[in-house]
Length: 508
Image: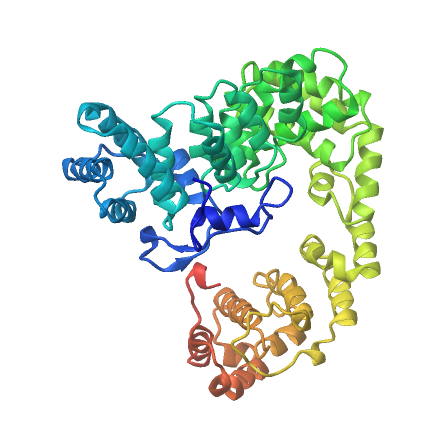
């Protein structure tokens, strides 16, 4: 039972385990039949996760149930084609979607099955020697029907659970073990992504250690934290903790969960939290007891927005307002703005940000360039911001050689920075023409695409053909048209050369 054949999924997982967990970038690539058998990469467990949370499942057709029965019977009888039958089943039907149907068929035909043979098939052929993702899952689904296994099989289940593609199936097995909750807790601490989502949802808060882990670590699972934020909030006892003075660590962790809950979709939102208004009021009431950073005040603002726009909680709105108009909040925001952070919150609170942000852009352009949008849309700071760009990326240094280049390498860093400038120019006719006249021939496709959108927007706004409106750029387009290597960009160039003066919004 400990033997793993070379090239098996289980063998690949075991070989990669380091210090009780898998490397962050570990993934088993496979051709997924749901994507026309093309080689794809999706986060492990993502397709099953989306299936559970977002898809509605129809009742299984009779022919599908018959195929399930045939595969089970073949496995029970020792038919050498049994694995191929399960493999074929997995190419049409995802294991997570038919788990109930598969197990129900085994129960209904129990008298006709050789339980020992089926058990061995599930472990040896599907789980240990399986080379198909869905076959390993089918094996775990069958194994679940036999109750608590011996220690060797438990070790196999634990190892598979470390990989998010199989976590939920391992957890289903662990739920049947005598110390199943402890097993799930040990597993959830060593898995992230979709695996952590599924394990948290089935972890019972039986001890203070588990409650503390759910509070401090359960929400550390970007970008999927919103799926489990409600469970972590409830099962960590956050509402009860807020009835007393919280520690800085508790308060910060609760705030993080509240932030995810207010984001709402795709997981359960704040409205699903029992007595949400009272819990949020308790949280905001303690703000003055803690040294909040810019993120902490952002959460208070999000609560205010939720209380005023999504719900009718006037008392909560008032509480938030008191915090956000405090000297402590203003000082925190002003400090953050000087570092190029918290701009949206400064705008929401009516705190001037332009001058310190411009200074931050001048002093640390490579880190602050993405904030240029806040200044470019202020007429008093538009030219000042362009001057900073001209200092760091002189227009004449933009290479004039259109390539089919995505621009990911370090050598294209300035072209990626230009994207943030270009995307703000579509509603500003004749602004930064020195850049536009050069980026239309940039080596990076995205620069050129955005430049075409700018020009289309300008001619549409002015209802004049480019030749009349900007003859110099028109002549440049004539010159580079034959050198354009991207079909989409070349088509846009031709449209502008042809004198079109109106474009649909999605092209601008």
